[in-house]
Image: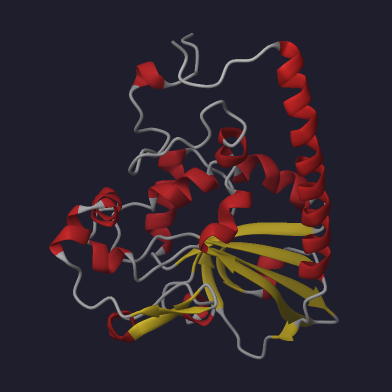
Length: 262
């Protein structure tokens, strides 16, 4: 017996048309939110930041590469990680395809992480990516944009996603052996170290030689950038998540991939 309600085509069509009303309202609301996002005041950056890239040392201004807009994905890859966060890696799997389109529409897309450049480039080669990735190792960039915290800050409580988060203190055995510990172990570190770097994205604009911060989002605010989730939200069983299921794309068993053999 089917585990879900069964209906006739006529019943399905009536329900689908009703859903369409909600989807259209959601789309219009999304358009309005996008305009509200773009209307945020710009904040001029007075501080200088330096990064290491495959082309050498660069300033934040250099990352624009002649464009007027810059989007940065704050990729969780701390100096003590052995490999990048698997969730961030899943998001980044979609970057190569869109980065070219953005670059030809006056927008540069970069990933930025605190790990040394050599680690980032080795991991990029492993993943088969080509999008630009900069190391902010030794810079205040990640801390200033609320995606890196010291151990002392972590214990006292941090400001993340525009809200105060309770102090973590020493990670409990339960948490360290739970999902956080599992994901941390997959990055080659422990839960406390892993969660001193957190995900986010930030937007910048370059105008008349000045750089302005225009927007940042964190946590579930990144869902819209996570290519697989809009698809899962339209699949019959939705996200259907139980525990931490996703893996880096080269870690799935071969028989579970959808790539046909040669």
